[in-house]
Length: 317
Image 1 (cartoon, rainbow, N blue to C red):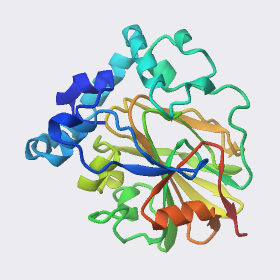
Image 2 (image 1 turned 90 degrees about the vertical axis):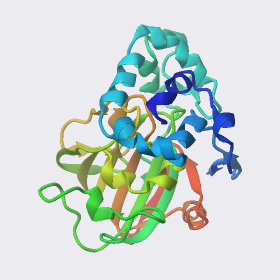
Image 3 (image 1 turned 180 degrees about the vertical axis):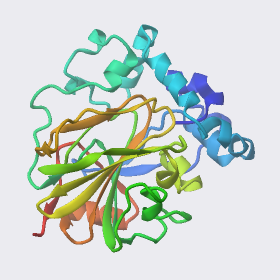
């Protein structure tokens, strides 16, 4: 999400792109149809102001350096006065509001709808390894722990994502990384991608609150190593894997809802409150065979929109 100076655009979900000039659209692949879709970006002009103008970049420490502004938005969307924003969000293509467990008029505030559960049965859990979240998926395969990640221009690496000394450390080796970027229209609860056992609790690493939208990522590719994030190690039949839940501008809270150590594929793990967010699935390189379309699109530099619970890979072991 964009900067606080454009709050009016943010809250009404209107783009002010004309003010700052429209550029090449952000394109992803709709997995179900194979169609290439130009993404509808909430507050496109505000994002471009924050990340593509000198004035916007000078304000980064104010806009994204603390949780204050994101928490302020979160409180606003917990208010009953925010109910009118639900219909605005539901009207954006891709929102799939018909899958919500309740009619939109029954939600007491915007955040109740944003963190909605789904009707039973609308998202059957697929075979193999499934996507832990709705979102636009990009694969980075055979990534060394000390190589810049994830985009050209990044200076931080996977080891940095895991945080400074004393926090969970990623072992030496190569990894396959699936980055699932959530947009505001997506279902914002995340789930376990396979049967597994959790090792300890999710570890929180404090950080910044930059947007995870591609407009921002091009200007600030180190976001996954610098934003606040929660990291959980899990053990499955194919070995260890990690789930990294990344906060972003507008994410008032990352809530972990799981309990106990043993989890079935598709069990709920937690949810994000209002804002764009990201879930990262990290496995040792080669233990999973990712589906061909995801591999092909990623090689072309394209994200693929996936739905929570649908298959993304199978195990080799």
